[in-house]
Amino acid sequence: MTQVFDNGKIVIQVLNRNNYEGYFVGGCVRDYLLKRKIKDVDITTNATPDVIEQLFKKTIDVGKEHGTIIVVMNGEPIEVTTYRSESEYSDRLDDDLKHRDFTMNAIAMNEELVVYDPYEGQADIKNQLIKTVGFAKERFEEDALRMLRALRFSTQLKFQIHHSTFEAIIQHASSIQHVSIERIMSEIKKMYESNHINQNKQQIIDSSLFNFMPVFKQFNQELYLNFKTNNFPEEIATQIYFEHVDVERLTELRISNDEINEIKLILKILMHHQSYKDARILSYDFEKSLLERSLKLINENQVILSTDTTNLEFAISISDDLPIKSIKDLAINGRDIMAITNRGPGPWLKETLQKIVYLVVTDQLENTTEQLNEWVSQHVKD
Ligand code: ATP
Ligand code: MG
Image (cartoon, rainbow, N blue to C red; front, side):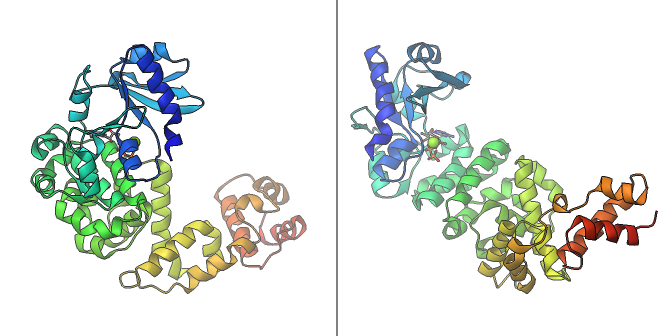
């Protein structure tokens, strides 16, 4: 359990030997005290980024202007951040802890794993409480994202948000609209990845934070509450499906194209799976994993998504046995077809290929060069 700290300890020792302070801080200390799996180890120090770079052989500048340098120790990347108060560097650990968001995240720990805990974060961890360092109102005025982080941690850790902290969230909720959507989405995704989002939905609604975020503000609260989901793309796809939100608005969330495409595909499956006349085509059109995720989504939400899943189930069952997975698997290509028919390129070519795909997937044509060549010479006029 404590060996995750081994490389961090070396970093702290090097800092100490050079007369600088160094402490473990933030999520790794919290998760260590909670006996949760520790993802990454963060260290805070009074050494400036330039000094950190000088002291260690291998460093990566990931945000020097924010005081953060990655020190690579025995191959492990460790974030080392210079003490800071709200906007500038500081030479005091106390200033650094004071500007952190919640008491549970404001505990420092030395290389012997002895904690320094001026805001009684350990007591709050024991009581499973999320409480701001200092007055919630002021802390949320400094940085409104902290309100969403409170919800994110409450979802992830199944902790209560302290009532005065939650009251301040309700009061200041609207100011989340001034936070960059990138920072917001990073917290929202962590919330969805946690698997506990369903239990926390009432609180998320009560906070009213979602009313001040693009796209989310158009979603129906009641539906959201009753809707079981364990994944961000599924949730968004279903909301769009019900609320008829224009998918193009997804770009407002500044999520990656891959994520947008995944949402669009799930949405397409939800919208069209029943209307496929031949489930083999459904199976061909979408990746098996996406079909499976959509089926799970529908099954877990029978009441609101009550659709006939026969097509979907069949499509999944035959997915591994389809004669072709994509147009590239055809034993013929566009150039072959043009040669056989003696015609130049044009929309007809794509149509022909699609027709062949349809016939092969529905077992009306065998995927051999011979069979496909013959079909083309018989059916495509030159
Ligand atoms: P996770 O396990 O999800 O990474 P974490 O606590 O490490 O949780 P990070 O977002 O990685 O969360 O932030 C690291 C630390 O930086 C936090 O524990 C907290 O002390 C501080 N911090 C992060 N964001 C803020 C913020 N908006 N305001 C104040 N302190 C913050
Ligand atoms: Mg972290």
